[in-house]
Amino acid sequence: MRQISSWIRIVRFNPVFCFSLMLLIMFSFDRPALANRSDQLQLIIKKLRENEALYDSIEVHWREDYRKKYYSEVEKAGVPQSSDIVGHWVRQKEMFYLNYEGKRTGPPADARQTGIHIKKGYDGDVTRLLELRHNYVGNIIQGPVYDFRGFQPHTIPLRWARTAVPLSVFLSGRESILEDPRGTKGDIVSNLFPTASYVGEETLNGLRCYKISLSHVRNKGTSAERISGRRDFWLAADRNYLPVKTESYNYYYSKVISIESAVLENLQEIQPGIWFPFTSSITVMDGITLRKKNRPVVSWKREYTVTKVALNPEYAVDLFRNIEFPEDAPVYKVEDGKIVK
Image (cartoon, rainbow, N blue to C red; front, side):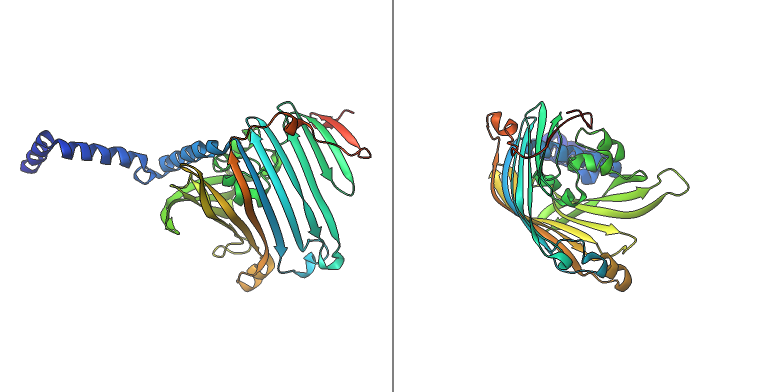
């Protein structure tokens, strides 16, 4: 009772102490580390979603370099050795534009060089797509056709997964992914339920990060339920919750050595309080060597170098609408996934 009375006197007669205590309480409630883990996760996802919105209108120019360093016997006839890409991405309100162009060198069994070119624009009504296959092919598609190649900073580690959904949605689970307008059935295999959990707070390269682990739960809710792998994310709290590091584990190959990793580096402040990674990379290990010899051997690496980035671009609608098709290219009109003309 004597101690309680002493605290009451301090609070009543020391306004500086009261103000400091109030700030401490407010700051504590803003830090996910003081809530239970489920609440921590939801708060982090909410903060992540708010920070993703800062990049809703953006223009990015980048170079993309892919190099395969190691071949298993089964890959020598089918997996390219390298590619060099120049990319341009614009997202402006609901409209978007992508030009993705370069060269690819084939596998050792057929090391010819071929072209890569994808050009896409959505004007708020129709998507026009030009794609180089053996020859150019055009598509005019009602509605938006989203693309994982669009250069949004929070989803750089997910580019290998070829998903266009935001990271906040990806961490929210299966239903959120499928319900998102950018989600597709191809983002989630039929028996997979991505399940996120909050691990803790860590310091990485001087940055305060929240570590999130996304388990690959198979056959959830059945007798065959199991976890086949996981992907760990380190979200930098003071850098717009950018995933400055990720590690992915496929338990078929190893539970302790990651088969894939990604890093976001050279973070620069492009506007006050808004940061962007000017260099980043994804590195993938050879699965056969990892499983048989329990050691990591780099299979391939993809590196991204941003040459220009700007927020809030202001282009006329012509940029998103005027996708030119070569005269000899077949052009298909598509509605509801079916060719109608």
